[in-house]
View 1: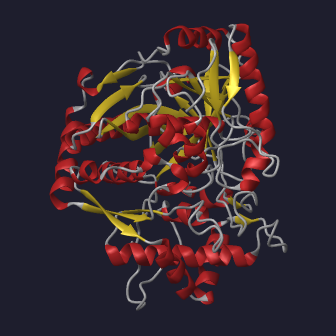
View 2: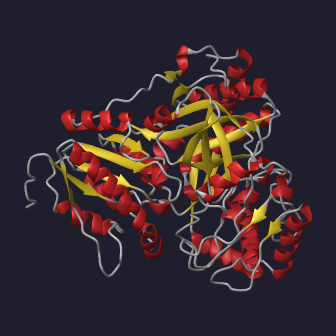
View 3: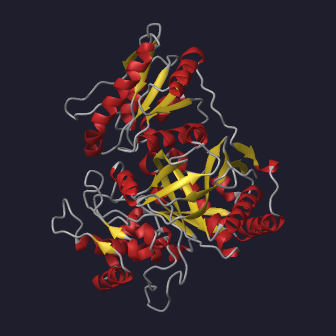
Length: 541
């Protein structure tokens, strides 16, 4: 039986990565975060009891598997106050089982840092807990000394829950939609439900992302059905693509202006062979998608094939771009998805896949750019009068979102701590412009959508570079402002590590895309929340 905790003691757990190299590299940041958190609790008269020790052989103190998580929770009093502290990317399924049966108050906490994706990990866990119906509170801080953190921590210690300001979000029914855009959204939704679409899923559950799996019944109600595909088939099809085809695809990108930063050492640099394998995977993904009639596909990216093939993010970015290397069918008689993007949802995030279907249909109907992607909500800081987010994802960013398209795209080797087989990223700086952002998530076994307007801002080159270096400089970056939604409001409401983004040609067009997309989602049966304001100045809807 778990030992009863002493008065004013809080248990602490830390979920980590599945990969030993990542856990070891990120452990010092986690230690620093836990020390600062313990100091803050001590000032309130509370002590921290870590529920699992540092492993001297592994050289880190993370829960690194679902099996270990279950063992750890067997030793925790189910009624004790519990903090899940995250300074790194974590696999939510490592701790989800224990959290689903924990009866005491739960608090998820992250440090406000871009170094490792702690904020990303916490938001993933929050979305997973929401989907699982687990009650929890959440909190974040740069140094655990600011007034907001201290006051909210005190609230949790006294009552077991935290209330945040969610006034930025309102039901869609409270705003007046553009009649023309609303009619279009309803028509598009009815067409989807009547004629249906297929979502290709290359193995579910990537990276422990429980929140990224949409229950079949909820997806079917939208007219979307999963084609469950195996990554072994993707691997096999990749091997069938010819060297000549890979050379042609690679050459196409180089002619468009993409720069690959190549080296000779497979273990530490990006090699030509790694890029060529990615080109073969790109052709393979299109052929399999065509075989099954998929309107969107999701590749596991990090886990699945990491020991067999280079990372898939170059593939994902190409697929999400309308202007991309042509690929023919196996018999050479057809161009696959000719003149179209094939929306790819990174890390098999099915919520993003559904959003991608909706976004492409809306933007195509309104003659707006159809390229869409998800980004990690990685970090952010104020710049001038704006709070500017760093949206940053390894895979899936289309060159159409970059300042100069393919001409400004660069390929760097994926960090070896994540990808032993390497692979090129598709790096670029997102161009200034008007965007619609959104997130579909699962709550109470039903689909919800948070949707808002935003803008991508142009920062001075040195500031963009500073932000890149503070996060992961090999990956594409978007400097975004969420209109009318502050940092803390966003963190308190957002139900995922990912955010969906798509450009429009101007503000008026972005508003029409927003209206149509919101009406589309509502007609599919989703609960839609309108977040923030219409523009940077705070104009109300």
